[in-house]
Length: 326
Ligand code: ADP
Image (cartoon, rainbow, N blue to C red; front, side, top):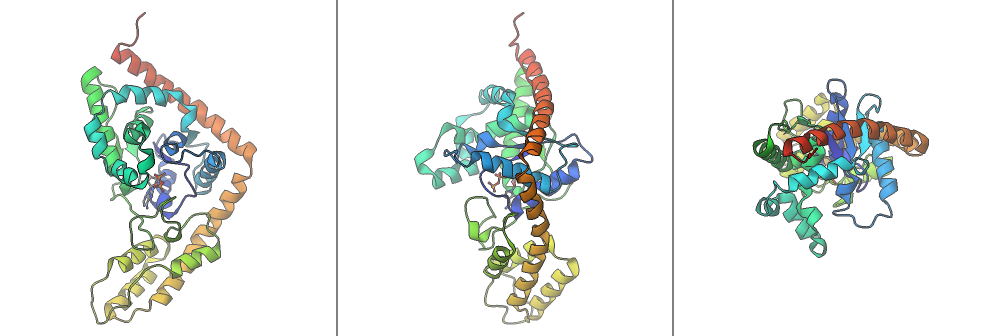
């Protein structure tokens, strides 16, 4: 189980941290992927763009390779059972631990005028999203590690207090380290809403991709052989390794070692490989986005399957808590 918030265009981080694994998992697992529209209200109270964002995220999920016939693709707000489980889990979550969560502290810094309770209990709703399907594996990027740890705590506490019901969910990347795609300006990760010129979006056109890559931070270049690779350049190599063949990446690494690298050449190569990677996804997403009839069908199918799974979990949870009187 996993989800993405409809808070803007999807980017390379969403793709390599999450979507790529969704696509791989749908062949082997019973998958539930949702558009997390409730979650977006914690940071995006203005809902004028919500509908178009939700449709776009759905289209981008499908364009990236999710097959709604195999994986269940649904909207969070259409499954009210998630809200009920969230309420139940709130009794097992403590104010102190929620206040200590990194993402909460970060959001308080970013939006001091809107520190709402939804923001504080974000990890509880996220745990409910996962636990509503009694999911075990959660394909997410590295930024979600702490939230997953909290979800495991809530599952353990529930099982301990009321009786065994939930497996302990774990972040999943086919046994490999979780991914963090860095931003192009050397500060933090690529993100939907925070640093748009340092983030590559799956909806960026070819010129925009080239412009952003050519502007990426490097340094003045190595002055001698075997000089240390600064973080900005290391990040660029990392991003390059996502879309460029191994041999070519190695070539530039060798050039760096020799102290002979020309960053402009490296960036040109990266820009062209990025254009080749993003263009087909962008074009496919664009055409799916305009097919509302199809998207409606996808969402209805998703709602039916996710609703069934969620209904069964809530029935069991009520029973095990003894919220059942006759
Ligand atoms: P954003 O942070 O861009 O708003 P979400 O919070 O909706 O994205 O996260 C959706 C998924 O994308 C999560 O699994 C998250 O871990 C992953 N993700 C987001 N940004 C990155 C990144 N820069 N690198 C790797 N994974 C990321």
